[in-house]
Amino acid sequence: MSSPAPIPAPPRRRSFAGPVVLIVLGIVFLLGTMGVLHWYNLGSVYAQYWPVLIIIWGVIKLVEHQRAQQEGFRPSGIGVGGVFLLLFVITTGLIASQVRKVNWQGLHDEIGWDDNDLNDLFGGKTFNYHDQLTQALPSGASLHVVSDRGAIRILTSSDSQITVVVDKKVHADNQEDADKYNLQTKPQITVNDNILTLNANTQGAGEHGISTDLAVSLPAGAAVSISSKHGDVTISGRKAKLDVSAQHGDVALDDITGDANLYLQRSSAKISKIAGDLSVDGRANEITVSDVKGAVRLSGEFMESVRLSQIAKTVTFKSARTDLEFAKLDGSLDLDSGDLRASSVSGPARLSTRSKDIRLDGLSGDLRLDDSNGAVELVVHKLGNLQVDNKNGDIQLSLPAQASFRLDAKALNGEIESDFNELKVSNGDNQATASGSVGSANTIIRLNNEHGTIEIRKGSAQASAPAAPAAPHAPHLPSSDTSEEPTEN
Image (cartoon, rainbow, N blue to C red; front, top):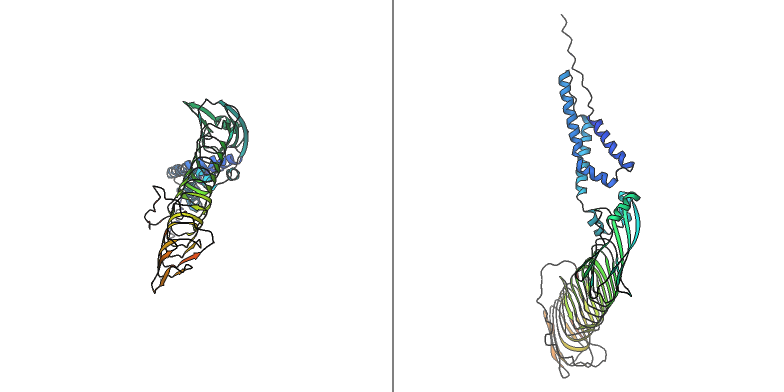
């Protein structure tokens, strides 16, 4: 007797969840290629709503399962292709969500991308607009300029008005959108008491790319303050106080009669012809200062180099690694991460630093110097009281041939050499000493070195003049700090 034929398994219907998801994705990307949706906006929409695709997939699979049971068919599974499609949606969705959280404007500022680079990346065009504003400036009023993006130039006018010439770049998909963003980002002038505020208003259209360059003309005697987040600042011909706060841009000051105060973040500055005092604070890149009739004070972190020249009054510099003060600087000073070079320095002066090679050429007056892990070279023209403490580096001191002084020098694990026969030099196994008087011994020189040599040389035949009396509050050297520090100057 033959066995009954096996009952065939019910057929399995193919799922249409995958095709539906692909159709939705295809429609969205078609809108992008047709220009209906901007690619940047398209990515933002996908980053926010990609889980909807998984919900659609799940709803379709649930409906298919219920219908299959009702009709006696086997419900379809996900399948290998469906698994790969789900993984693709989940992976790209998670990536898009993280990318959406990135502060692209801040990254743009930090890296220094050109606006055209973003145009190439996200598409779109750049549209240019020009405008002009005028405003009467009351007597004794000051101007405050605020700009998130764009260059600022402060010029001198011959009348009592403020004239603002506006050059704007608008990033948009088309002319209609650009015109709308231009109207939303018109620069604004407001008056509060005796302060006029000029706002570039680059954020008036939201996150759309707007860059506005401002050329501002006003009377030379009006005080000016500037707050700039991204863009160069250029100021010349001012006869009043100046305050500048700048981020991610270059600052240029020239021919300023009043005091100038700068606060910089990731910015560089070139400053010349300042009749008043100059102050620079913050976290700056390259600083160049020349021809200042007043005092100069620099405080903060300076990532590249500092160059100073012709400073008529006190020079003060303070960073994580270096603390110095000179009475004045007739020559120049060049400071970077590994070297400090200065010429025609007048004391009383103090200098405390680490891991730098130091050369002071043309030193006049008193000096207190503390260094480690670097060589010290001093060329003295007019001798004053000197005290030099150094570690892990040589000391070379060049004195006028006719100098008069009393010396006390000590070198641990090093030797001492001298061109002055009046000094008594003793080089032992682990320590060398030198002492004695030369001439009338009007000044005192103390040299201390560890793990390095000391050389005392005769320099030029220029006669040594007595040092000027120390000021009542002569600067003193701060205590040494051996903690970890960054690599700035």
